[in-house]
Length: 360
Ligand SMILES: *[C@@H]1O[C@H](CO)[C@@H](O)[C@H](O)[C@H]1NC(C)=O
Ligand SMILES: *[C@@H]1O[C@H](CO)[C@@H](O)[C@H](O)[C@H]1NC(C)=O
Image (cartoon, rainbow, N blue to C red; front, top):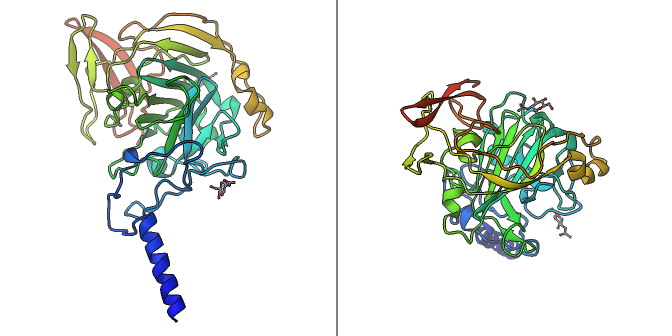
């Protein structure tokens, strides 16, 4: 009896040391964005050991050869280069991002890190952009191949969330893209919009004092066009360097005049009268998808790579305010939005009238 009691006591203490169980509580003792783990040696089984109102972290962060493949629930993600990045996608087929953002798992282009792998033919166009403050990947994808329902306009994943546990809960991200280009660093500020067969993911360099501004997470209903303005093209695979964007919520016009904007309140159909500035890019190197994703194709988990080619090499594009690229724009309620855009110029202020298609 004594033995059982002390075992229970020990388990209780252990549970308390590892996480809090209070299914009525919203906030964790430590916000996800305040947690630090080195990759690969410091990765815990789960970065979030709490059991609060949103439940528990459904997957895990300690991922290896035993977890890799189509059943992986790895929630450790990577953004390194045009051929080495992960997107957050649902664990079960035919899911909506809005229903599953808290439990999304890492879908990656590079085998060897214990994650799911994106079928290479799913990727229809990818642009990697390296700037002084962040790296960004924008692309076109058959989202059904990473378990997102057809026509789902999607939503935003980021390490914050209303309860500070992140979406997905406990999701971690790492990169070697900063510093000497060879050292794993935890990405503290990032955002990833998925939906409407498009995606954008931005990983901000923590050594930049404005990391949290460039990777702002509060504009969850206005998609890639505002959070990650870009000139990515469907059918093009390229790696570029670029100038930095305005922070989401800030607009710099062609005269350099700066103004700010907010997203429409929830439930209000947005009539957006501003457009994000697309920064110029340079030194773009074009690839074929099979050049980039051959490791995926030979991994045997999916079919052969597509052979879409790009005709653009070393292009410099992206004039302010153009609507080329993955516009993944506004939607009425949430997400990466299916929208059609039309550029109009009003009184010298470039603005975009967004015809919002409500798919909810
Ligand atoms: C591999 O990952 C699984 C799942 O996180 C974990 O249980 C196991 O301990 C890991 N194996 C090694 C050798 O780290
Ligand atoms: C991208 O192009 C492919 C054809 O290669 C097309 O099937 C797909 O719908 C396009 N995606 C978007 C988002 O326009």
